[in-house]
Length: 346
Image 1: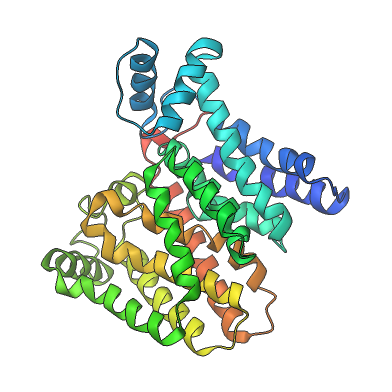
Image 2: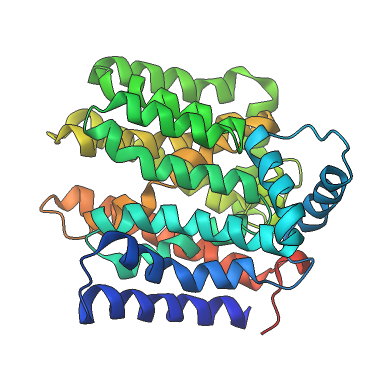
């Protein structure tokens, strides 16, 4: 637990030093220096740290010995290269480095508060997930980096980066829906969102899960954590009814704001994407392979929250503060109930 708390402060100090004291302008150098502490922390973690660490090590050994492994071709290729040059530990570090390099490449250009954005990488769970779902979070980081190409209407570049991300995890392809979300009329998006949420009540399994979680808000003795929700929620002990309930409420509030506020198109798109992410925790939890789609959508709160805290809109500022508070509470909750496979010894 102490290691994670220390890393939050180390990353904040690092971000402050390079962004505010020295005010580096060169993009690639600045990105490298900003991402290095987290790359070292995650990439050089002790053996066995992370829910899938041993599984990926077994994949690496099988690929090195010439066996067929049914993973995405980009990740298989990295394993082949690492088997000749660096070994499994080298692969772990390289994946961590690339992941956080892409996150900070976007944050260093678009975040108005790089210090808080660095903290949001922890609060949003990205640092935790990067130790287990390594290839998925690597794909997420590439999607995160590509968002500006969408906003600049450079759809060829956007789809190219999504295609690259899908070489490491096929779920990245869901980010292609961002193009559709961006061009939907407000009324159409409202109807779609209502339909999307209503699936929770139309599917018996979804309704059961939702009611089960709501019960945990009022009856702590009933169940604090439910394994059935999803691997991710169970692995990080975030699956409390209260957390799910707040995600549900925030998704509705963000939807209403994106529908009725007079927003610049890019910001409206970003809020729509994040709202879909919060809502996805409800709908997609009934189909485990797709629950990671919620992370692809929700990760953009890392960018939106710090930028909106200084918004002239009281509503947007309040929503960003609520999102920050929820993310921070989940982070504290995860630390308090730290699973064994996420414990790092300094």
